Image (cartoon, rainbow, N blue to C red; front, side, top):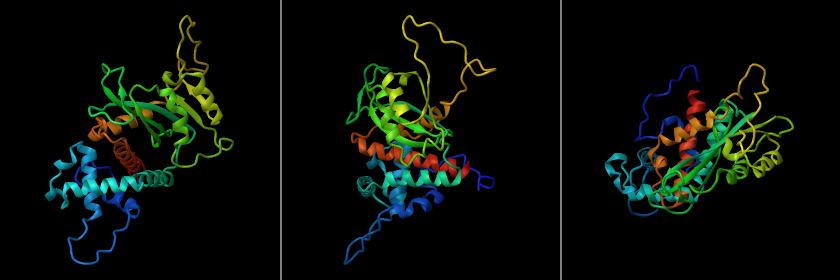
Length: 284
């Protein structure tokens, strides 16, 4: 598959890729039977295309024109809310993690965590004053990825919450079951923001081998040279999670959080992660 299919250079903002739709169509709730007179139910594929357009452009729901998808904006928004409450986007993320596992195999040996801060001008749940943006309202996306950068766990907090409080939650939030650490050695990579005793304890209790960059304390002597022969520093492992966070930022609805309802924003992020997993598995 990877040798014969080339990834398109540009994303079609108006339509979910056909191959992705074929993989997730069965997760959309079945249409109720229409009995009696009345307008026929709007097509689910067209409604999902509208959600896809909002994900990429970050536009308001009411800005969607009926002639773009053959569905009015209120129906697209109502369908999105219904699917979100039914857990459809959770299931889509799990389905795409399984698809990625079947196609490429999950790289459990090295896992990385990090977070990305997004401004939230309208506020809402899970927002806080961003200490790096003059105290403006913002939210953090916390993410755990495998050794190739495939997203496996997500969490949202306010921008004022320290990264260390999300490490154990991310480990518990991995959407599929981890292999037994006794059978597969698993390494946990994180930056200095996670170098705290409680994080080390949580990581070790989860039976990871910790690789958390040391945060030099006051009056502490410099670190010794890297113990790996021929290396001046430890090999870079965390860049994959930073790349995945940048991929998420290409979608304007995620680059800035305009959703007051955190569950709606969470659903869009899960949809975006599912698309990233699809791209990695389908195109390599």
